[in-house]
Amino acid sequence: MNFSEVFKQSNQLCKVSPDGKYLATCVQYRLVVRDFNSLQIVHLYTCLDPVMHMEWSSDSLFILCAMYKRGLVQVWSLEQPDWHCKIDEGSIGLVSSRWSPDGRHILNTTEFNLRVTVWSLCTKAVSYIKYPKACQKGVDFTADGRYMALAERRECKDYISVFVCDDWHLLRHFESETQDLAGLEWSPNCCVLAVWDNCLEYKILLYSLDGRLLSSYSAYEWSLGIKSVAWSPSSQFLAVGSYDEKVRILNHITWKKITEFEHPATIINTKAVVFKEVEKRPVVGSEDLSIHQLTVDNSLFSTQSKYEITQLPAQVPVIKPDPDRANPKIGISALAFSADNRFLATKNDNMPQSLWVWDMQRLSLLAVLEQTAPVRCFVWDPRRPRLALCTGNTKVYLWSPAGCVSVNVPVEGMDPVSPQFLCVIIKQ
Image 1 (cartoon, rainbow, N blue to C red):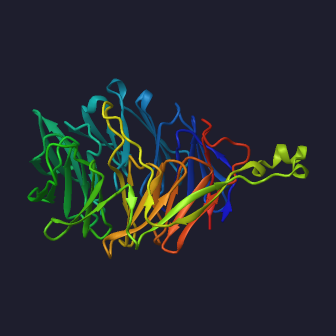
Image 2: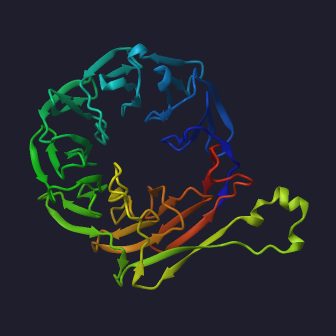
Image 3: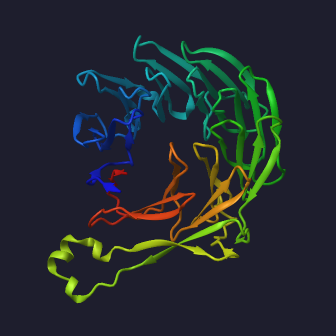
């Protein structure tokens, strides 16, 4: 693997353009755009306040920078560097900003979720959508960019509005059979809208584009319910993670459960492989401790790690959650399907150091990755069945059906938990 030099960035704002040609990073007030191949700076913009959110347009021609404290949004053009746009929400405030799929409209949500304002960059027209609900995921677009689903709250009831993104007219408006809607998400084939209730009630509803209720599913009652939801790329499966530490897989024909994946503390499945990260500090001799090496070569003291296969049965480290605190660290908080639908990766919050990989063809556990530190995030390769994860140290971990590898990122002289955020580009 090849590593770039270290680039500064703030608020973890470092994003590659959708076409893969540019890299944008924010450092306080400044927006820096680099050519992804050469990593040379091609554009440099100065914003009016520290940037809190940054997002590329779908065609990679514009960059949105949101400054929530001042209620401002600035838009920059890569084709015309002298052109810029400023949107000021004024005293009503701003809590979120995002692009529409066409890359020519911006959706701003005001404070207290009073309304969603749709700004057009082409015609300068403004549209207002009232009663947006403040929830985990209250807005979602279809994969083809034609429709938008919006969760609303009116008169203490949940509603769903479906808008046509061409002219933002209302296509469907219907009441949702939820007590307190927590999120919604379109299927990748744009045919079904999944809607789920808050954690106090296990209920997931499936609606068609015209608002018909296709099916509803509830696994149990009188206990904490749904925590995460994920569609498979083919729309054949809907994975539902819950607080009971299980993932239930629903099929797209009958919308019934076909299997459930448990996350036991003891793994006895003989077909599963448990990879355990083992750290080892290198032994440094006195002849290696020169002044030059101490000040320049920090790799002398870096911790190396590798994976070892654990014999079964294997124990998975478990953290007992505190029942007296809100949002207990228990249950399936993250789900992700691989791009080819073959694998599903899951994370159980009371087993924070472990990542589980499931085989969707055999509907069984395939591998468990046991790290030395809690897993912070993971993502699938968009082109091949390969999983990348990180734990907040100076390493990136990769899993594929062939095995696991630990990659040490050369960030010389920097503490991995330092408040100064850095960006390193890894190329293969």
